[in-house]
Amino acid sequence: MAKELKPPQELSIWEDAQKMIEKARRDGVETVWDRYEQQSPHCTFCELGLTCKNCNMGPCRISPKEGGKMQRGVCGADAHVIVARNFGRFVAGGAAGHSDHGRDLIEVLEAIVEGKAPGYQISDEAKLRRVSAELGINVDGRDVMDVARDLMDICYADFGSRKKEVGFTCRVPEKRKEIWRKLGIMPRGVDREIAEMMHRTHMGCDNDAPNTLLHAARTSLADGWAGSMIGTELSDIIFGTPAPSASRANLGVLKADHVNLLVHGHNPVVSEMVLAAAREPEMIAKAKAAGAAGINIGGLCCTGNELLMRQGIPMAGNHLMTELAIVTGAVDAMVVDYQCIMPSLVQTAACYHTKFITTADKAKFTGATHVSFHPDNAVKQARVVVEMAIEAYERRDQGRVEIPCEPVDITTGFSIEALLSALGGTLDPVLDAVKAGKIRGFTAIVGCNNPRIKHDSANVGLAKALIKKDILVLATGCVTTAAGKAGLLMPEGASMAGPGLQEVCGALGIPPVLHMGSCVDNSRVIQLCAAIANALGVDISDLPVWGASPEWYSEKAVAIGLYCVASGIPVQIGTPPHITGSDVVTNLALSGLEDLVGAAFLVEADPEKAADIMDERIKAKRKALGLSE
Ligand code: NFS
Image (cartoon, rainbow, N blue to C red; front, top):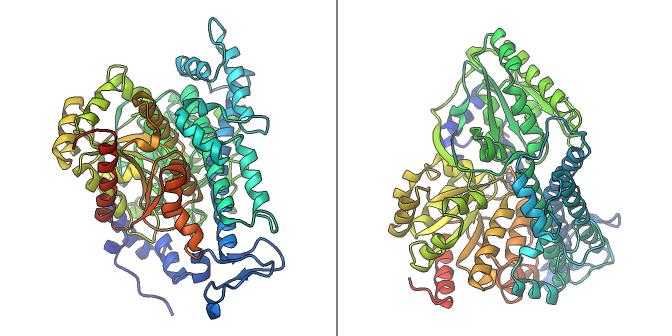
């Protein structure tokens, strides 16, 4: 029997989402919330992490309490081993996603160096030289392409097995590296740690849950300090380092009289080229010839964040808005690369005139139109994509179009470089504000949406609760659009902050929530924490900082959470991963890691309660640093 539909007001806090959920129901279009209801209640064994499909003696599902005695899988694995193995592979999946994205940027850099990437270039030569010098490359007086070639080699080597430590650990405080070395979790090479995790979790290998968990930490560190960091740094070098700029957000960024082309996915390698093609006079003329006023590019999810940070392109929405964007009837084409792209989008697009276009050979969708992108053909393929959008526009039924609201203003572009330059070249003004207690601490709120949680309620709730306590919030990924729609990415949003943060925002003209980029750009967050720790001569775990992912859903989010924790940054999450079937693994995550790496996870769904707990720790950390309240 069909379950009763929940009112849209219970599913999302946003008017644009609520209206489009209603329209989807009117149009007979299924959404993620419908499928979530159909899947509920979820399998308890799976929720607890107590199912194993790693071999063909199974699948097994075990009950830890059956008859008072621990059940075991056919191989003999107990709950702790099964949970740890599953969790380890989950982290490896996330680390692989970010890092393979990073590798794609190395390949673009390589193609640039070899002159085989028309349309791509070194946009920030100063950053190329700065980052290369940090990694020990001689940059003085050398040709830019020679330096780029050396950087490319070093980055490729970070994926391999020849190193004892990945390159960017040069940014990590010495005390932290000592902890990693002592625990045997110093990241050596991205592919190596991921492959070793797959090996360890094969039947009959690592059958000691804490040992598996430590390797999960190592794998995540390879993501944060290598795969993701390479992704961020090379994106800045190739496409430009973000600087503060103004933009807009929500479904109101769609324009009824324009060709609307949404970019979705993660890697700027595709979306930057599509944007460049859409700006070509020839393409604009074609759009006008088709009766449109112009071509409007909007962003979704993290590739949206990438274009927002560097090009000021407006954000149409975050993860749970991707289907609803198409439901407006105004999206002529959605072009995607990889990650966080719901397979359902093919069906959603088929309900309208929307052309759904895939671009990555490693992420094809049955039923989509595939336009294969590579560094050597990207310029040409981007034009093909834009032309498809224009053609689709001609088929658009304006009678089905409903753009549900007006866009809101946001500011973006707070890379570390931009922050430093806004502060006069040094972190001192921020450190002084921290010492004076005007900024009591920092929290990076990162990640996703999840239909388990009312869309954006926790992302926005936590951000508001923290800024009220004079805790400066950094936003990345899908939290960006949430914070933006709530008015928190504008300097005026500081009126919602506590008096200290209000004063700092007023003096510097910044919002209480700073947009630092995509999820890969969480590498900026750990780099910033490391820089602050180094400036104060302490470890990262001594700082009054938190990470948070109130509405996380993805493997990548867990990899981020774990690399933050392993780097000494405690992390709040709204829902637990599938580990609660093992008390050994759960206790390690919630408290045991504190003893090992000086930080652990907090699972608290209520934003106000979470903010209170986070505040207590910030108080304690401030006190330990000798800072007053
Ligand atoms: Ni991050 Fe980006 Fe969004 Fe979550 Fe997905 S887009 S990498 S995983 S859902 S923030």
